[in-house]
Length: 99
Image (cartoon, rainbow, N blue to C red; front, side, top):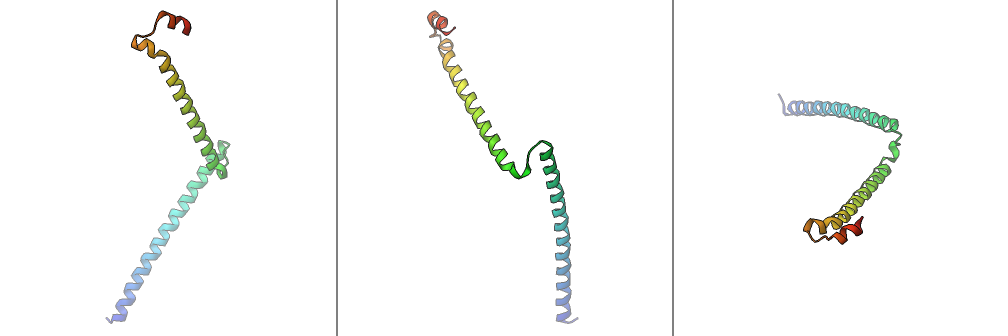
């Protein structure tokens, strides 16, 4: 077998591998498109426009951040209010003025 024949065989094998890889990639693309369509359908069923999902996520993150900050403030305030009673420095006057 000549060098040219060997070279042809090698290039045909490589081309076959490329074609197989391309088919696998097409299948993966089709699956990704199917998954995307399913996610978009689920979003729409929940009255969420898939085109505005980034805005909605930002709004939810902002709301979540606000709730965490509020809970943190409320907890800190409650800790300050009960601290004298936890350390035994609270008096009857303190207790009567708190209620």
